[in-house]
Each structure stands twice: as C-alpha cells, then as structure tokens.
Length: 231
Length: 231
Image (cartoon, rainbow over all chains, first blue to last red; front, side, top):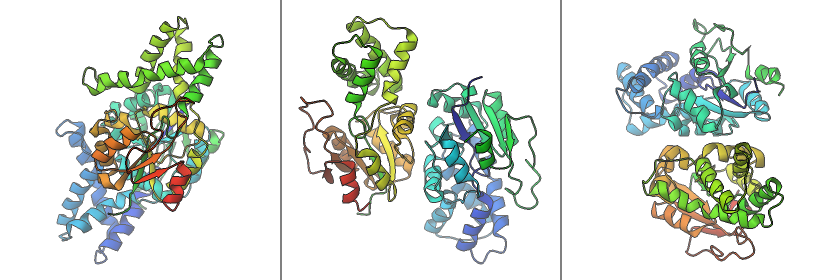
C-alpha cells in the first residue's frame, strides 16, 4: 500500500465548532432569545433531512446555503420570530463564519507540508471559502458536495472527489469526527482517520464519543494526526 | 460601484511561464530532440482546437488533462517519437509542474490579504492543485473550467464561477495576459486587469503585446496589480 496523497476533511464538527459559533451568532442577532444553543441545535437538526431530499432524488442538487436558509425560516417560524429578509440572509451566513477547534489550523498547516489537504464537506464552496478566510484554514483546494453534486454519505461524494484529484480511493484518507462518514468513505476504498470531538454537540453528547471501528488512525486532535503522519 | 471581492486569474501565460517550463521538461524527457520549444509550441497549438470540440457541443465536457494527452499523442506521432504509455503519461503531467513568473507568488500573496484569489483557468482541478503545491501559489480555492463544466471564453465559465462564489459579476475581476479573455469576462460584467506578458510565446511573440482596450487596470506584473489595489 502506497502512502496516502490527499487528506480530505469533514468540516462541521471535525474542523470547526459549529455549535458554539452558531449559538454565539444567534445570540448576537436575536438578543431576546433565551436559549441560543437550543436554536442552533434545532437548526442543525434539519440539516440531514434537508439533504435527504437531494440524496433521494426528490429534488435537484441544491447548495447547502439554500438548504440552510429554508431550514432557518422553519426554525424562525417555530420560535415565532420575525426578521427582515436581510437579517435572515445575514444570520444564514453564520455558517460561513464558524470558528475552528484550537488544534485545527496548526494541524492542517503541518499536514499540508506532506499531503494535499482539502475539505470533503457537504458545505458549498463559498461557505467553505469564507470560513477558511475567516479562520485562516490553509486548504489547498475547496472540494466537497458542490463540485461533485452529491451529498455525503452517497458514494459519489467520495469517489468523484478522488477522481477530480486524479487519485485512487486508497490514496485518499477521510478525516472525520463521525463514524458514519468514515464507514461510507471506507466502503469506497478510502483510508480513514477518526478525530474524537466529544463536545461537538455540547455537554450532553451521546453520539461519536469513540471510534466505533478499527479506522486507519484514531486520534484526539488534528495535531495528533499530524504527529502520527510524521508532519 | 462597490470594491471587487474576488480576483480570478487566468493561469497559463498569466501566472505561469508554460512555454519555458514545458520545453525544459520535453528536453529532459526527449534529450535527442533538436527543438523542444518547437515541440512545446506545437503541443500548445492544439489547445484551443481541442477545447473547441467541447465548446461547440461536439463532445461532452472533457478535462484538460485528457485533451492534453490526446494532443501529446498527436505531436509525438508528428515528430515520429515512440514512448511507453507510462512515459507519455508522465510527460503529459508536465502541465502540473509549470514555473510561476517571478512576480506571481509575491503578487498573489499580497492580493490574498484583501481579496479572494483563485484561478479561473481552463486547467482541471488536479492540474492547478499540483501546480500550486509545486510553485507555492497560495490560492484560496481552485476554480475554473472543471467545477463549472465550461471552457473559457464561454460566458458560463465566468458567470457560473461568480455564482459559485455567491458574487455578482461586477464583484469579480478577471486578471489575464490575454485581451480576448478579458473581453469575454467584461461582456459578462466582470472587471478586468491586463497583465502584460510579452515573452509568453518567446522572443517572436506577436499577440497580446499590449492592452487592446481600456481595461479596469493594465499592469506589467501581478506585484504592480497588488500595489495598484493597495495590497
């Protein structure tokens, strides 16, 4: 087995702390709200169902920004909150301004010296690009659902990304905090690295607290992954 | 008119010196060849015709790596040169290993502090990504023909790139050494910057020696563009 050439990262939860970042921005936009974490969690809970419509073929490929906007309007309605269209659009762009976990930028910077580093996220290109500019994440390229028009965990999301890179699947390594993402990537022939993020969903997190399988690597941080891979 | 948000760069000729780089690699791969520049020029002469088949709809979108390979086989045949498939594939990857003009990396690095910087090239993603890694070009994202499945100067190449970025065309600036590229971009509503590269085609160059129109900016180098834009 040759060395991997590219490390492809899940982003929401793996590289960035979406929950704290979204709650902070919700709190700023809606200061009267009692529970910004509850709002963030409810918004995020509509993420998988919104993509499922695309995965099932019920609707054409639609960028995550647009799915996020539809979900936000649903949540605002549930919370009985009225906002101008401009304020809704700005709040929706909170996902472009997420903060990285403390180890992410150093880890990715070190890994970039030996490997291609890129997101393989369900986020759209401008979301990931703005996030990278804001958080100084030094990606080599912005990949993911939009260029391949397929949402993870559909096999096309992984296989078409490898094809774009001109690599065989086993030359690619998926890096994620979610066992299901790694499972789907491994089924496509990717190598796998689990990064434990036990507070992604806050203090009461029950999922992905540990590696559920013998992934190629299992680490506590992206800097630990860099050390493991001699970077 | 608001400030531009993204600077989108033509690459072959504008950011990198393809002719010298290809000739050097041809010379290394085919040491018995008398005129590596002639070989490079002939190979490049098949570039526009090969894309024209895609633009006209005569064939489906095909990556530039594949078009380059077909053109290379044609040129090898014309020069009556036999090579193994592996050697042909490696020579074809010369386009992934082009050297930047001396001002490119400094200029793009400075521009990146204020703007999104990305290629809007007909090169495919892995070609541009490998080139950026080799030449240390700090792109924020790798855009161009492949993500939008349209070759310049088709309007879709420019308009879909702006759409991916979530920007209006007038928030984008095309940076190129080729007047025809800027003409097509301006027709789509982009701002324009002409970078003079009078030796792209060698000492006998006759085309694009000067700006043919009143582009938004006209400069001698990417570092001059950075200074012009206060970077």
